[in-house]
Structure formats: structure tokens, C-alpha cells
Picture (cartoon, helix red, strand yellow):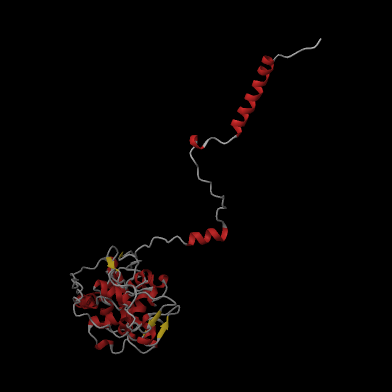
Length: 344
């Protein structure tokens, strides 16, 4: 029997095939332009910088410039030389910026202006026609490099100049500390021309120290007797012993103190850093008294001062002590004579 498919059944079978083909084609084909906005093509992928490239890029980042400090608060143990070196300036610039001198003393908590920095309005580059300053060694004569064991007195003595000249040439004072490797001059550089409009530097406050009438305590009496006894053993005159008594009263109150200003120690506040001996030696009262009278390998004692007996009371003491306040010793002369008469 022959089966005949009717035209209507054939049409029904054909329609799904056509629809499936159309739908599949529509899903694969790109959407019409009118229904989807255009998108820009994606950039090509690039590798992140590493190694030398990253280092080169980081080097192009300019750090924020930090302005240098203009003031400094003095800490315990500071010296003007320490502050100048740490701040990139000079002791002379600190003197000028703060109205100080070679006999000035600084104190913890004191605020100092750091000299040497140019005002913001001044261009960083100097004019082309300005002459470059001469090196310090040319303008100030030959220099000397400090070695271990040096003192200011030994350097001055070795090179035939006075301590005052060495202080002035280097912007130092009796309280200054020197260090191995530090370069010292023996003559001061030529002074810069003074500015017509510059105001005079303020003068330091006058010394208001007085010498009260003192009744010696047991400790002070024992130390005074020790000074007198050593002086007698060394053949020192009454005037020399009185100078030692007055000096010890000014420096320590006639008490063998274990510390003092900076590294000062003992009855006469002698300093290891200036050649008076080791801390242990200076703390021994007998050693300190003998050192005051006859000196050490690096310092002058009273008997080392030429013509000391013809000097004023304060002047003779000052030649040993190199104090910032030399006039104080003479204020005790009368009482020192009385102590010697009573105890010696």
C-alpha cells in the first residue's frame, strides 16, 4: 500500500525546521546597530613595570622639601660647637644670631636662633659677578687637627699663642669642648664688612653674683683644712693658699661634688675633657688640690703661672680656672684670708 503525504502535512513538518534555523541565525548574528550603542575597542594589555623600570619611575617622584629649622632649644650637655655642627652652621654665626660672645654661657631650655641660613627672599644662586669666598684655611692661616689627649691650653702653648687668641680664632669659650679630628685655626678670618643698617648686638646681662658672709660647715671646714695642708706640704705661700680656698668656694661651695656643669667634677670643678685628669682622679680631693697648685701634664696649676704672686687675686685664679666669670674669685679674698688665719 502506497502512503501519500498530503501537502498540508508536509507544510507543517517544514515550518519548525525553518523557524529553528532562523532563531539560531539570529542568536549568532551581531545585534542590530540601532539597538546597541557602539563601544570603543579595549586597549592592548601591557605588563606592569618591574625591576629597573620600576626604580626609574620611582626616582621621578620628587619628595616634598622640608625647610631646615630656624631655632634650637638647648639640651643638657650641649655646647655651641655641638649645636653649630649639628645645624650645619658655625659658632661665629650662632654668636651673631644670638648676640653672644666668647664668654657667654648657654643653659638647658634656652632657645637659640640658628644663624647662617639666607632669608627666603634672597635668590639661592649668587650673582655671577660676585667673587667666591676664599677657603677658611687661606683666609685664617694654617690649621691644626685635634688629636686624642689635646686640650685648648696645650694646643695654644704648643703653637705659641694665648688661649684668648685661640678662642677668638675659632669662636670658642672656656666652656667649649674639642674633639679628635676637629680643625682649629690660629688666627681669625678677616671680619666681614659691617652692614650700615645692622643693629648693635645685645650685651649680656651683668653678673650679679655676690659673696655672702659664710660660716663654714663641718664638711667645708674639713675641705678647707685639706687645701691648707696640701698647700703647706708644697711650700705654697699664704696668698696662694687663700686663692685656692676662694677658688674652691666659688666653684663648688668648698664641697667635693661628684658632678657639675657639663663634665666638671670635685672641689675645683676640674674637667676631664680639658686635661685635668680622669673622672676618678679628679673626684679624689687630694689629687684635685695638688692639680690646682702644680697642674697636670696638660694644664697649668697656680705655681706654673709666671709671676702669679704679682697678679691680682682674681687674675691669678682665672689663669688656672679659665672661668666665664673671673671677677668672682676676688669677692672671697677677705673671707679666704680669715679661714686661713683660723684653720692654718
